[in-house]
Length: 202
Image (cartoon, rainbow, N blue to C red; front, side, top):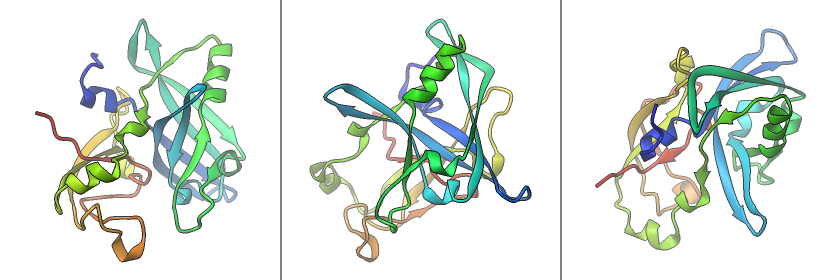
């Protein structure tokens, strides 16, 4: 499969998270973004999701697709299992901001030590709009999000699904005085942590 267009690359910029709680009956799932933060020493890679996705998680699982030559070996899965999963994340200090992150580089290094290599793409911080870019957006915009709603994804090829919606409140204006906006879309459990993007080509 090619991974040249923005949409093709987005297919490899998220992972599905599966969690087990301390009670064996406690199970859940969500989505995490592979995010690249630029710094003086290069790109810092991390997984980003919502705090509530990993809350109370004893064990967490996610998978990558193996790398073949310079692209994905479609359908060939590499699983990662992490104990004390909730403690492996760094939560945003503001309790009202439902965001948490996990450094990705240690995991990638451990994968390579086992003689494996995985394929992924990361979302860049340059995708976060500046104040000037926000000012140019309309009160209503079409949005795209990528994830694993209600466990729906291509299990044979290990690919997430795309979904569309619209902004329900202006992105430039803090809804209820908080740095958030609302989206009108069909969102199901498992979508939490999905990136929400304005995807306009042409």
